[in-house]
Image (cartoon, rainbow, N blue to C red; front, side, top):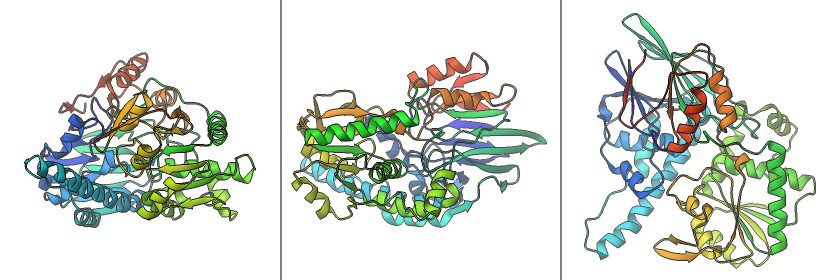
Length: 462
């Protein structure tokens, strides 16, 4: 029984851990690397395994840094089963197709430059047809029900409270009459987040793979983050500029819309138009409405009462590129919610090009900004940034609200791991070195059996 860390070890993205049991190989996630160029180049490297020999992928959730290389695997011969929750399957269908669109568009753009420079042209990681084909391999499962993946491998999906359909994975292993239990945290949610339920607390494991995205940081509480958001909106309105909110299309966009709906219904918000400039976020919102089994009690009661929290006056979903470009012509203050959440793609980059130089406009970060991304550079105070090959001055106001992050903070991460009985092996994954080290040091105070996973490291499950 072995696990090899093939991604998200020493960095946040590229989630992929290979489990070997009974001489068969399985993947826990197969995600895309995101961030600096030297990290994203890993997406184009050959897999560290033969995709044709992978029996199954057990997917924690649909975010691209956890699922984004599944189409590439299929393109290279993977024909096993991808297990995930029902909501995760529906979201993967739209997110992987969107990822393929991004790959194809960026390849066209890059090839124009390569052709000018006389360099070899490149192929996209995968195309839309690959993303569509891989969905035939997906099998949706229910939360809290043990399923047989193969002889010697059973899995239970527990709600991780991170995004719609996200899961903590409990893996029950049997090899040569030895039984072991491995728990993968996936991305643990932020308790008190809107829409989805709180993360499940698990009690027993021999080995735990644990995320550490916010291993040293503490979020604002729920009431505080709403107050901060409302004050930022009012301040942006007074300044007369544009409030740009880079947002992940799944969960973060819906949470912001949910809160704005509350502000509007209570008469707290200035009269500003709100534009959701993301076709993917629009499709994701439709998926949200189809999966009430994932809602927390408050959201379920609200929707059961007939109040759709994803619709309110002055909220407009923007689909076409033409309508997106028209937003540049608006003179009065307004709000744009657009992807991508880390500003490394999507329509938010075009809005940043047009407004970064404006002292009366604001960029509000409401989610994690990976090292090396455009969002991280802006958030960290860069005076100039390069977008699509051109440099732009950064003069906008910068704001951040950590409480809207879909990731648990240090306090809940520690609460979650302390809930395990005895002292399981703990391997820290999914974090930048500083965050992983900080979390590991805290865990060592009550469990000495903790390690920071390294890329390509192979560990035995004892």
